[in-house]
Every structure is written in C-alpha cells, then in structure tokens.
Length: 300
Image 1 (tube, rainbow, N blue to C red):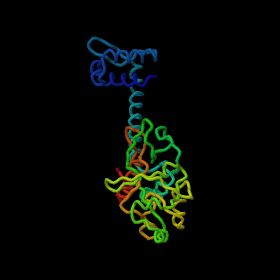
Image 2 (tube, rainbow, N blue to C red; image 1 turned 180 degrees about the horizontal axis):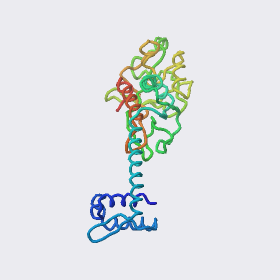
Image 3 (tube, rainbow, N blue to C red; image 1 turned 90 degrees about the vertical axis):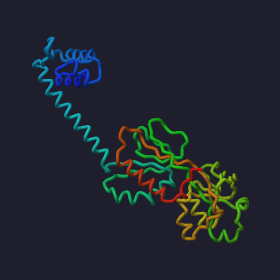
C-alpha cells in the first residue's frame, strides 16, 4: 500500500471533501482523485460514496479510516521519539582525529565531557586514515584536508599553530636569538611527510620560508617531542602539545613571536535536518577548549 495515497485518503475522509483536501495538501484536486482511485484499485474496494453534494465513506472506507488514523498516530509518535533522541546526550558517539590532536582531546576535552555526560559511549579512532563521515561510520571528524566529501558540514577552525622548541641546555649551548639563526639549528625532522620540514614562519606581516635540516627524523609529534626533551635537537611542534613543557621550563620556546602555520583544521560531521545534541555538545566542548588560548590556532 502506498502510504502517500493512504495519507491523501485520510485527509479526504477528515475534510469530507476532495476540494478541501487538495487545499490542505497544497496539490491539485485531480491529484487527490488519482491518489484515492489508485488506492481503491490496490485494495479492490470502493472507499467513498460520492454525490454532487457530499461524499461519505463506504463500510470499507470506515474500516480503513480507523487503521489510517492509527498509522498517523504511530508516525507522529515515531517523529516525536526521534526528536527526543536528538535532544538527549547519550548513546554512541564516534569521533576520529589525527593522532596528536586526538591525544590533545583526551587530555583537554574528553575527561570533562565524560564527567558531564556519563551516558555517552565514546568510541575514539585516532590516525591519518580518511573515515567516511557522510556514510555514518563516524559522527565527528577533525581533519586537515582542503577538499571535503559531499553531504557533510565542514567548519574551518583555523590552521594548527606550531612553535620552535628545544631543551633549555640545548638553548644555552647554541645561540638562537634571531630568526636568521634557524639556519644553524639541528632539527628533529618529521618523517611522516617530508613537505612538513618546509616551514612557513610568520611574525605579524613578516614571512620567512625555510627547509629545516637534521640527522634524526621520526614520524609522530609525540616521538619528536620525546627526542627534543632528551636534548637531541630543535623541532616544530603544535603549541597545544608543548604548552605545559614551556610553562614548566622543560622546553625553551625559540624565536618568540614567530609561528609556524601548518595544516588546516576542519570540524566535520554529516549533514542532517536536525543535528543530534550529543554531536553539538561535544563540538561545543572542543571549540571551548580551542578558544581558551588564541595561540593554539592561527587564521593567517
């Protein structure tokens, strides 16, 4: 049975008029008649007694009206339940992000989020693989891609801001007081992508391009950080990652005032008529953390 035809039948029965039903449905009277006729053919039964002055339900029509009203009630109940589910913060929430950004989420966002919303089953996947957001494999993604898939909401948050850091003893042994001294720095290279060793540094309107050199490389920010903490060289690392080490004097921030502008950071989630509250709430927690310090991201 075609549910659209059934809905048309229900409106005609309630209005007791094909003309009024057409006005209520915002369609032509001819389309209303065709829907009812098709439904009668499907059921092999006449649903209305029609005269020039009035229409009345047949016995079959009376029986179908009861079922149609029950279906209408169930549809409304289902709609209300879905809306209710969209407004509660519980159930599964699947989040994917790059390794290091995911690590920062685990430190700065997820503990307070879980404390506030203990009924959320948080499923985390951190790595560089593209996960299908538009197909529902994940609810939220943080990605550094310039091109976005279709049927998603993609919010540009800014570019991740890196800074140049080293161990304090390394800084004492090497003179790195001005940006030109960067040529003499032994860098821990990023082995994941050689292009990430070509730095774009900014200080206000000043711009400096430089390809760093070194004899050690590693493929994760965390391992590079560990090597820098051991005094093996200098590195370009996200400020959100090294901030506590700078504040505790375990790392020295070189070339203060200069920022390394790196990857775009996008917040991505599937396009829906109504975005579930659990998604918007988690996004708000992340945005609140990022906005708590204007040194984490750059929009230059």
